[in-house]
Length: 302
Image (tube, rainbow, N blue to C red; front, side):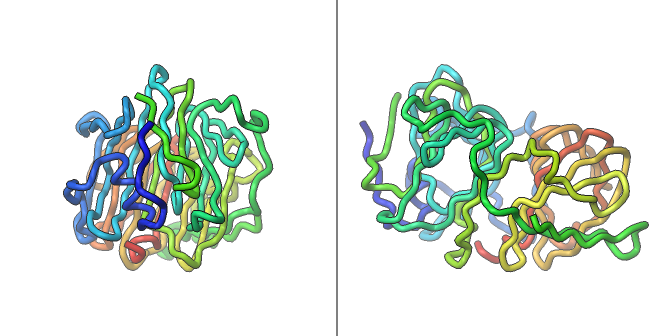
């Protein structure tokens, strides 16, 4: 059994230490620079925790780090636990257990900053000790988000929804991630939630009723979270369409989940990750079936 540092650490520092150790250099830590990661050209790194691998998208090292990454755990991997305080998760494959409930691939989870005393738990993979395996466990209140097309485009919609085994002892963490039997692939972000953001999210993105009209005809948006100008959402294309998102003062972040995304610089296949500063603000184009995870307004929290 490996016992890790207590959650009195800055939460992202705890997570990065578990995964990468303490002597990790920053990666893609200049918001003024456009960053594109293609899955076929990006190296997965081994972590300090068994067979888990990580594809670091961005890492701002230091006392108060910031991390965006994809984490992969093979189906053959033994049990694994990670700290998950102040953590955002989009589950792409596998199963997550949180507070005794199981969540299938497609769920969006957001754990607010919690003290060790208040804590809650999260695990990756099937958990025999869970209350029950719920395909659609009780969810949080509907997220609110917004996305606008450029005024010069054909249409502008404001979208406002009303809608080796390692673990950490429970006394040392307020949230944890664990994989038991099923391989997992998930997007995680840490060090990007402010203390004032107290909303806990459990959103089933397979729920078709959550989709709203998109910024232009042929697109739809699913708001996942909004807090003080920070937005997270899914965007999908029902047909070929192009639009320019509302300008964010510091840029945007995009992870391609399905299909292919295009801009003036090229084509982005599934699991490509793009971080654009304002200087690269431009139109996005997708074909029918394209699905992306889109974030903006969160850079100032680094």
